[in-house]
Image 1 (cartoon, helix red, strand yellow):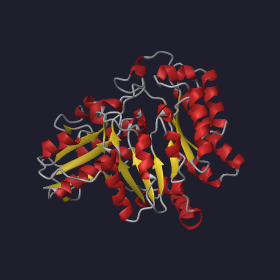
Image 2 (tube, one colour):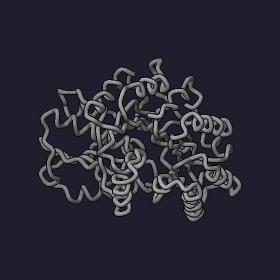
Image 3 (tube, helix red, strand yellow):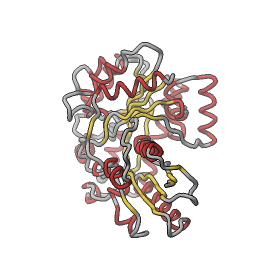
Length: 389
């Protein structure tokens, strides 16, 4: 049997899920082929934002138009779990899966179920990104830019899937159940990358701060193990929700110079908005913990995510977020404009913010973080925030 996989325009962790599925197909004697020759057409999908959902609906529509009646179309990833009706409205015969690998294995009848939960990935770069990548390759050699742009040089290790959170704006928590790997399993995958000669590693998870909560382990224990190997290598930690900063011994683990990058998605500078988002932390205490982390590891690049235009976000709330950005607490900031998602409680909230105001606020944040990098004369931070790479 032959398959054709479209695996792009999703977040890294969902794209890695697609790479895992690809490895399963090949290990079970399936052949990867062109679109025209495939028996099965597969597309991985994202639904984090309304704009991304619209993109995938359009791509699935194109796939239907270009396919022939003998080809089976399979859509997996986040969109089938968050808005299946919209996909089936295009064609009721499309086969839908979320991010449940066991169901995919059962449907395709795979006999060989073994695959590595570690991999490398790649993506097409824009012209500007190619220039930045070249500057880094020949001059800066910064692992943080390598992480963002030179993806084939990054070894990804998945440590868990799913999230323990209950954020009012999120529908992706419905796409998969929370499950952690054991520390010894992660270590085996990490050693695989070391043996292959990789120097930059990315720890991937929907929420790495929750790692081990289902099996008596925790992220501090894991990171302490990962930084203990000999050799020169760097580790980036993704999606580390702020409550993880209060885990025992976490600061000791993150203080290692081998931890070069961490994403701590604060989401807003207004405690009122954070409460409406159901983000379970006190912002002032989180800021204090981040400052402690900076003192423990001055070379660490700290990334955050911010949502602007959440329902009820006043100008005063937004100014608190802008003040947080201007404080210089973060090295890189990814800004998202709020959008209603299916089955998310926030989609039912009143006091919605107009798209024009969201766009204006997003641009103000983006400009502020770039100006902060210029003020600090930090060329790496400037590049990390340029065009939201």
